[in-house]
Length: 449
Image 1 (tube, rainbow, N blue to C red):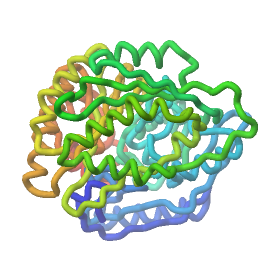
Image 2 (cartoon, helix red, strand yellow):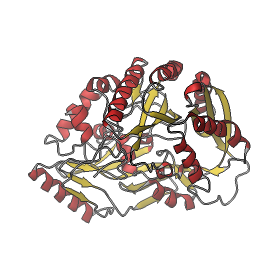
Image 3 (cartoon, rainbow, N blue to C red):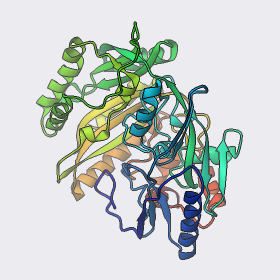
Image 4 (cartoon, one colour):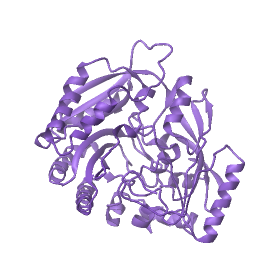
């Protein structure tokens, strides 16, 4: 098996895709699988899209499990839905959209699994929320001994806080109770500004204007003007609201063209400048940009699929205190342009404070910088990426920020411990709840074992 980086070919003993159901057969089948693996000394790892780039969903010589057959129980009165762990966000949107609802928080693409989103505690465009875990009310977790426990902020609260952003190391999530929001037609406002002024505009907008429901930013990436300009896009409810709302869509006629332009940036500065010109000057003047909340969220990561056999896309993500954002841009200007890897995109998002997860990357509000590099699939490309990553992490830690763990496992253990003060407790409680270390993956081996 492999993951989205295509740099982690991993031998596994077994890939099991059980059919999920609310109770009964699945639970007993999981218990039997865990007992068999424990008796044989094999590791077990859950996965869904298997997009994490550090091999966290790949159990070397162990059992990989992927749930199938998603199911839903939707409570529109209380705006909560119970969903099986293996459901993808595209399936959630398909079920909620006809009812007039939308995910309150989800990843920025729809082809990831809901439980996987909780395990990496991902975030997206909706504001002013924290990561996805902030909208999860409860879940059922199967521990290494086969016991099934209910976890929430009031019941088995420690396990809840460990499993949130716990990378599947504490057990198998069976299902989750998740908050939803009303689906609405949204209208964008796009503002161009100097890159160094982005935080000064972005934070007041998302924290003080309750009418803003989604927001993100972008930065210019051509080397000549690297991060010199920023684009802030915010969405408010359109007036009037149509009834009924149009059904959620995914992609469009421009998707293939956009991907082609995106790919042309590799090895050439002119397409980078042209893309920025289109995003910052042309696109805002063409059309209304009206779209429902669900349509904006309903995009697959496959829209930006990389067809090259010789290069791979690698993500980084950094969480920066807003007051240190200007210094973060200065650090990036020093570290990124000299690197061998091609820098092709950055999206800026807001992440509200996470007061629950032991491995919180945003203990206070943060600006998240989601970066995309194109790397050669070679030893030289891998060394360059490792060195660039460690340089960026050092600079971000010096700014009291953090980096996201589920990408290439290029950080040092010292960097992990500095960015995540809860690491020692996380490892200690892992060994308490899973003393035989049944649930293990590449991240455990690299950072925690």
